[in-house]
Image (cartoon, rainbow, N blue to C red):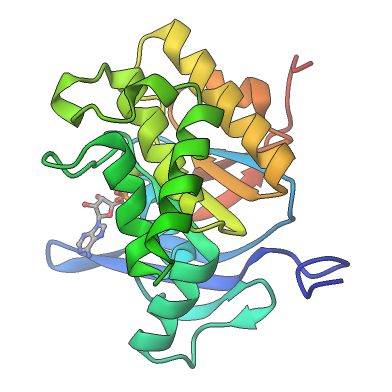
Amino acid sequence: MTENEGNTPALALRDLSVSVPDGQQTRILLDHVNLEVAAGELLAITGSSGSGKSTLLALAGLLRRPDSGEVTICGERTSDLGERQRTDLRRRQVSIVYQSANLVPSLTAVEQLELVGHINREKRKTARTRAESLLEELGIGDRWNQLPGRMSGGERQRVGIARALMSEPSVLLADEPVASLDPELSVQIAELLASETRSRNLATVIVTHDEVPLNYAHRHLHLEAGKLTDVGLADVR
Ligand SMILES: Nc1ncnc2c1ncn2[C@@H]1O[C@H](COP(=O)(O)OP(=O)(O)O)[C@@H](O)[C@H]1O
Ligand SMILES: [Mg+2]
C-alpha cells in the first residue's frame, strides 16, 4: 500500500479562496472551494470564459498560491512548503496538459519526452526506452522523430499527453485539452485521457468549455461565481 491508496484523495482543495484585481476593486474568483479527486477518477469542470477554471488548475498544479485554503497532493499539504519543495512535489506527482500542447518547437516528439526524463535525472537509456513506449502507447510511435511544426494538432496533443505521463504523475490536469481540435479528434483525445486515467490510476481533472469530455467523466462540476456545483451527468453512458 502506498499513501495514495486507501482513503487519501490524490488531490484535495480545502476551503480555497482567490481574488483578483478588477479595476479599482477585487473580484472573487474562487470562494471557499472544496474538492477531492480520487485516484482513477476523471473529473470534468465546466464554466464560462473568465470564471476561473485555469486559475483553479494553476492552484491544483502548485503554480499559484491561494489567498487562503489548502491544496493537498497525495496527502501532502502544500501551503507551508517553500517554492522549491512545491516544485519538487509538482515534478513528482502532477502534470499539466494545455490546449495547445506547448511543445518545444526545436525538439522531436521523443526528445520532448526525454527532456522530462533528463529533468527528473532519469538515466538516458531508460528515459529513451520509456519515451518510445509511451509514444507507441498513445498511437504516435511512428512520429517519434517528427518536429511539432510538422505534426497535426491531434498528434501534437498526443505528444503533450505522452510528455505529461513521462513523469508518472498521480494527478493529471488538463486545461481545455480539446478546445483547438475538430469533433472527431476531440473524441479521440477525450477517450485517450479516460483510458490513461483508468490504466494508470490517475486523478484527472479536465477543465473545458467543450461538451465532449463530459461523455467520459465520472463527475461533472460547474464553476460559477466562485462556487463549484455538482451538475451531475445527464445522459452519459
Ligand atoms: N493574476 C491575475 N491578476 C489579475 N487578473 C487575473 C489574474 N489571474 C486571473 N485573472 C483574471 O481572472 C479571471 C479568470 O481567469 P481564468 O482562470 O483564466 O478563467 P477561465 O480559465 O475560466 O477562462 C479572468 O478575468 C482573468 O483575467
Ligand atoms: Mg482558461
